Length: 262
Image 1 (cartoon, rainbow, N blue to C red):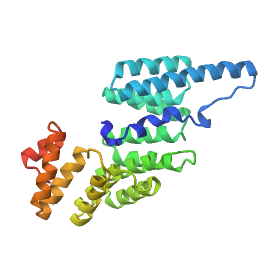
Image 2: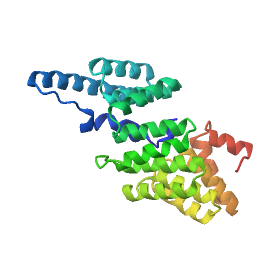
Image 3: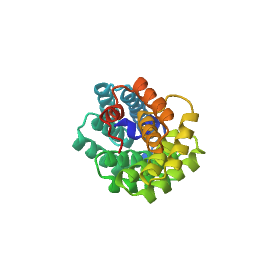
Image 4: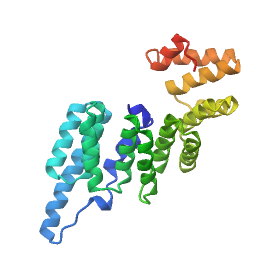
């Protein structure tokens, strides 16, 4: 599930470090200011802790930390969004939906919450409903990582079969990231592959191989299929060997073993 948002931990977790002004209610009296500030700081701290536990797959503790955050400040939107992500990982989708909607009711223009809810909808099979939330995120001038929402929008549009829109969103992601997002190249390579443009798909994947590090199983399996269709047996065998060595239990390798090349 986290795989969708790419190498995507930053996309899912950044909101806890970037509270927006719209999330902060400032009372009039100095004494009330101090109380609210202390409650908000406690909520923020425990939401950040929840994010770390979420990233470490310690969902029970992450859920407990979000509960502490909301006990300190029941109007802290990021805590609801974080808890929604935890519920999603626990496959408690109704609870996740409730928390996302609560977060958006408090901070409807928060870009990270919009991005996270869009991701949730896309994961739930509601691709077309998800896209407006990604676009809402990138419209916010305070959003510091629009390339992440554009990547998610492109991936979601690709999943929905909206290839023209997918290309536009993914190219926007590349523009904002200055071409430094291999996962975007993988999505563009998949788009080209689905359009039958094997040369573009291969060139996009070359960018991924040159980026260094271990490619994702998705990238390697796509590379195997591209080289197979192009008749490049040496390259196909090399990528297959990497897929088998790095990800022997992956869904992609199982597809290879079944000979499911489409």
